[in-house]
View 1 (cartoon, rainbow, N blue to C red):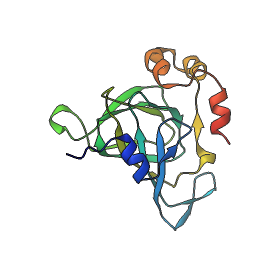
View 2: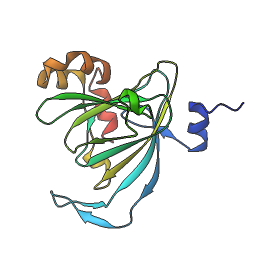
View 3: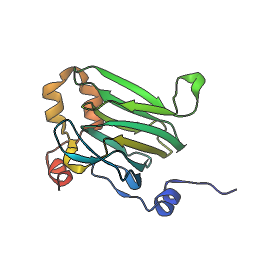
Length: 174
């Protein structure tokens, strides 16, 4: 029996490393342009494939647009969100609806968020659609010290999902 694993999807979908962690490839973008609230021109929407291998996390980051996540294959994953007001919530993205998983999860614009694979021995493949469309100019990656200063009440999850040093942020901003 053929088993699809992380390497299969990375090769077939031509996924590359993402600054936040994991692997991604652009899958679609709308040709239509819109103006954002800060008067920037963006695609109406963009969509990517995103994969976390066993042991990888998507580090805490923020976008200036809403992002809708869709489950595709592998282990369910948890999307961790700190709202602009500082409230923490987690949502399980997967297909076991009876046990609280959802096949789609919305991350509201301006939220700080990251994700982690629910099973240590498995990968997770998802799709992410951003509207207005994603642009690295609107992407902020956070360090542990930045988030611990702002949200000390969420120390446990911050230590799990935020980068340890600012060197990663400088790399992500390029």
